[in-house]
Length: 176
Image (cartoon, rainbow, N blue to C red; front, side, top):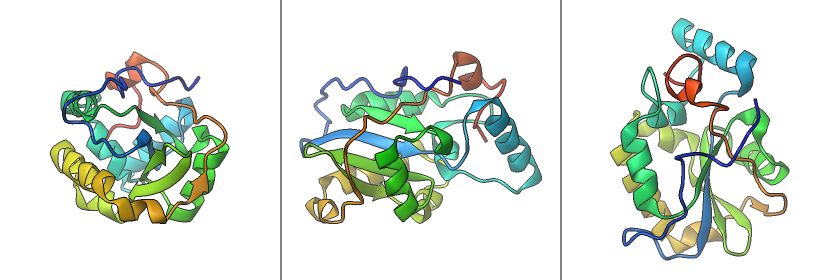
């Protein structure tokens, strides 16, 4: 599966609702591998109760990506990139090694990666896009969050659109 800049994940178009805090990108890291094998492994693990990804629960319904996710990303006005564990760029992988996954990171205008929503915080959102948006906006507004960087940016992270529309439409994918 080729990772590409995410169709429908983030337009980067400024919005009146967009935070004006110098964030250049939001990066969400799923707690699952991408590709056919990783996705099948996740779906089977989900069915058996041995796999869980709270970011997957937020972005996807049982059959496809949630329309409210797409609307939230459009309102956000900051590019949003989603990647699986095996699709991370080196700098994102380094940050995820510190925070664990799933995680939502912010890239500052200086290229620093900062954890915005940790695994525990994402678990507490119980799949709600609305609660995710509120938590993310609150994290983006906190200048103190920038004082705890995890990694200086370098390589451009690869975006995940889960490979193809078929995965977003529920045939195979990281959905719940």
